[in-house]
Length: 218
Figure 1 (cartoon, one colour):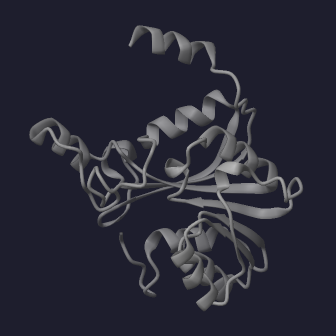
Figure 2 (cartoon, one colour; figure 1 turned 30 degrees about the vertical axis):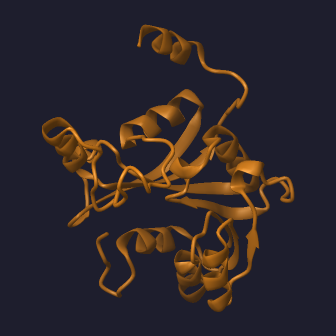
């Protein structure tokens, strides 16, 4: 991942720039708390994390962060509507079992939601699949097939179309490649996409007719 001039990774720098000072932030799948710690230090945010891994939670506590142990697939029933200025899913959206339900809850609880996803359609990934016939391993997808935490394999274009079908507004979008920000053909050249989204009409129990038709065809 590209690094900003102050030593913060570029994706964390972009997220930090998005979030206003003293905002309330809920990080879903916060890992070891590196991003939350940066937000507390740089923006004095009111930080809350949710993480399931014991070792990661221990690292968060060492950083002085407030983190609850829970599975974000189980929902956010403990939180009221719009109780956070920002809800973050940083490289965790593609790892959950029920992305529709998780995103619906994130949009309910947060005034804005920041989604960070790896791009499975990056040119290096395409090259490895086409010419090597193997599951790709790239900077944004560093795991071998047998150890990856990713359950859903989406591209930047997939996510943009997903939002359009559900009336989710993409307020801002940023794309990162191996050498920094990507401004042209992000679905091909970006390794990571960062989206700021709001709104949406997500139904977790029905499949849109167009998607059902596509499924029958393939």
